[in-house]
Image 1 (cartoon, helix red, strand yellow):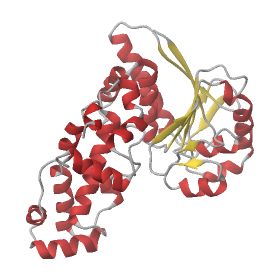
Image 2 (cartoon, one colour):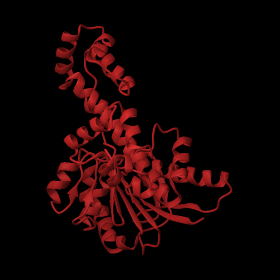
Image 3 (cartoon, one colour):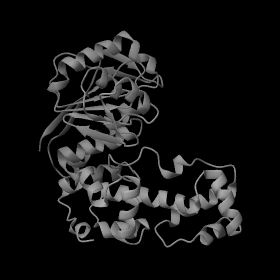
Image 4 (cartoon, helix red, strand yellow):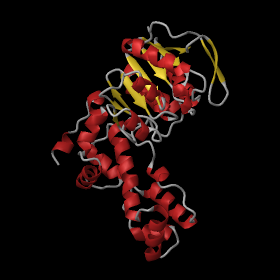
Amino acid sequence: MKTVSVDIVVYPGFRALEVVGPLTVFKQANDCLRQTNQAGGYSVQIAATGTGTVASDIDTHVFATKGLGPLVAHTVIIPGTTDVSFLGLETASELKLWLAREGHRAERIGALCVGTLLLAEAGMLNGRPAVTHWSFAKSLQLTHPHIQVEEGRLFTRHGNAWTCAGVTAGIDLALAFVEEDFGLQLATDVAKELVLFTKRPGAEPQLSAHLNHPRTICDSIERAKQWILSNSHQRVRTSDIAKAAAMSERNFVRVFRRETGRTPSEYLCDVRFEAATRDLAGTSHPIKTIASRSGFGTYTSLRKVFLERVGVSPRAYRLASGRADIDGIDVSDDVSC
């Protein structure tokens, strides 16, 4: 079993979670390998413009054991920061120069959140798709029009460059690295050990349907939203949701739309679509099974929603996520429909 060398590059004010999250994933991967008597795993070092302690955004410190010399590591991870003024500092300039000079030597570079902007300014994303935190996506597209910014995704890859929304999505990116390096089973085992709700694929939206429609001031509508989340896989009528909210159906529809900007049926479809995208990109379930599990019932209904929302069929969405290529998924059921 191989050993993958990883350099995580830090700088003053780096976002701690974007370093600790991937570090924890790699450590757990090593532990899982040891438990099954397998050699190899990850050898991780903290790098910076100079050796010594470096303070994070929450004032915890890490110790950089190496500077930014000639790159020999297989994988490089560039975390983001909560202080975007960092991009104008001398340290950022040093990082960009180093990336421009050495970045092509890495087998894989993962940039998280504002780290994507560092790769962009180093000229490493020209003509490539890229992802950053949703709050920076529009500014990245404006300042770097030659980059194809993919808003909403957790992460994407092109060549040796992986770009990511950052924050907790850094954990998802690290799990994707584990899957690429050692297979889906190890990545799944790591996710289970870390008690993650799901191993989210790159195509997963950054914001869930629930976060896109934040908490309302009406407790009845909040109860209805929670009920939808728990029952979206079943056959649901508007009257069922209204009953959960303890409201008449007519009044419920009016208040729900006022509070969320969506009708109950539209919100239900949002939740089901999110579940379907997660299964298509993150599992090997047959597409017809996913249609049933997500609440759409039939492949025809699932396909109609995908064409309306993303312009491609469920099969094309799955292929674009890389799941079929990685796992050899039989998607003939999609073709025959």
